[in-house]
Length: 227
Image (cartoon, rainbow, N blue to C red; front, side, top):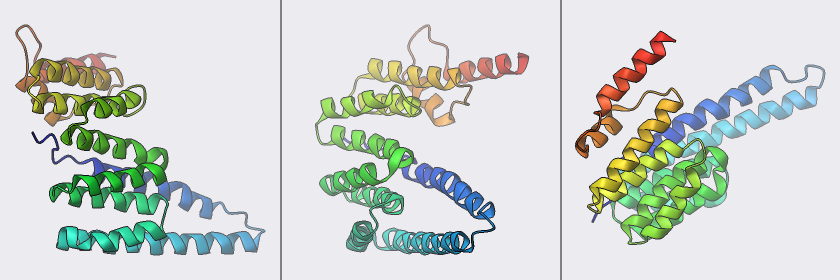
């Protein structure tokens, strides 16, 4: 049974990375020690180097979009030459292409690369994709172990949602319901809006006596407005 859904983890990782990575980089250049010409020159070189890497990532991303798995060799070559966050971002794109082609073994290798070289920003997104892949290939206990490692961190709501997706696709509606409710609760505790897709997932497996997710969201907004 297919437990892989067309989620937006890779896209969200890219957005988060651009937001978090370029801000401190730009700030560092702006406040670079004015009296040290060598330092300014180094910062300028560093910026130019990163811009070139980012451009190369973009070029290979286009190849992946246009040619699918046929462009995987070019992506893997870039990854081997850039064992850093740039390579990690491209690795997640590569995994997405491989998943679409049902090359799950190849996708697991790409995800492992992203986890190893993506740092704290990319690794959790890679782990979520890895859990889906492991479940898809029949390794549910390993998938569960990965999700458990994320339940105490910033990605706990996403981990709970993925846990629900896996349970639902294997026919366990009750487990899916509990996981989706947990994801909703974690988001509400953090005062974060519950995505409409997660609300729909929960309402699809709702049990008698449960409050529909859209009503929970409305109540949370009302409570926040009253504070």
